[in-house]
Length: 364
Ligand SMILES: *Cc1c(COP(=O)(O)O)cnc(C)c1O
Image 1 (tube, helix red, strand yellow):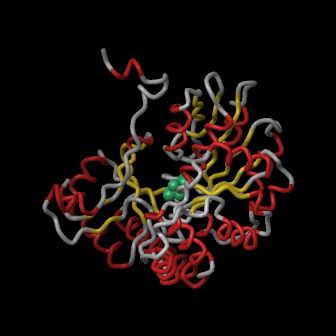
Image 2 (cartoon, protein in one colour):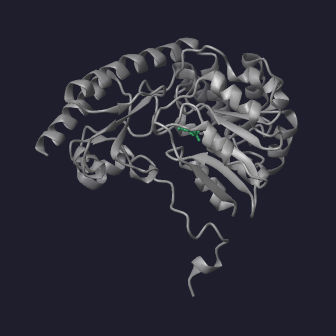
């Protein structure tokens, strides 16, 4: 007997999510020191001082359960985004809300649409519940919304769209997203995953679309620009009835108290956010400028990372970079075996990566 035969259908075929290699693991396995990690799109600045202070204060209360309703954080978000707190669902990272959405609205026999080269959590969340994932072919590495519309069938429950997308960094213009929303049937829910929205030069906020489209759900996170990946906190914005449904199946204390306190503080720290954007813009230019000189093609990115074509087996380049003490992300699992995804780091980190890459590729 194999326990695989006992697992619910869908789970047995799953490939586990492959995270970026932790710094300590590389030190342990390769004996390399002075490691830099540009592999998980984390904020290279470290946490905001305001968030750190809030965590220190909140830690004194950690014998208590967290506020299961996340009252203070929801109020802070509601005020900032000019929404009602009833439209907000908090999650243990936005991954948690993505999963809640899949579990609430899809099941065996239902279809969920996402794009080729899109965020790996979508197929995981969908297959784990026995639903059918429909991956539409990408266009220029990004979402082909026309193809996604065509893929809608009577069984379609959900559509996941990452904007900007991870790992490709591609972005869909607001007008195009709106035209798409206009055409999606009311009973098909559209999840707009905006994990990197804070890095965009804001033109029009997608939050306004919630007024026109009851079937729209926006997910966001404190893991990227807000620099709190280790604490795990994200959220969904939606119609209150959808939030109510998600609330029924979430774990009662899914967001811990330190995370809630840190998120409230981070929301109020505009200067940290501004600095994060600046470091990202400068670093993006540093990396793309050097890729241009090296003759390496890359996918123009709106996120805090860039995906570069190394024109050879990227898994090998990744491995050689590890020996140089540089962790980046191979993305063969996303159907891109010649690309590496590199998170934008501080200037010295970017420089070390570029020098290591140039040595590794030069060795051929
Ligand atoms: C990083 C990322 C997330 C956020 O994950 P958290 O669980 O909030 O840390 C969600 N979607 C995409 C596309 C991402 O890249």
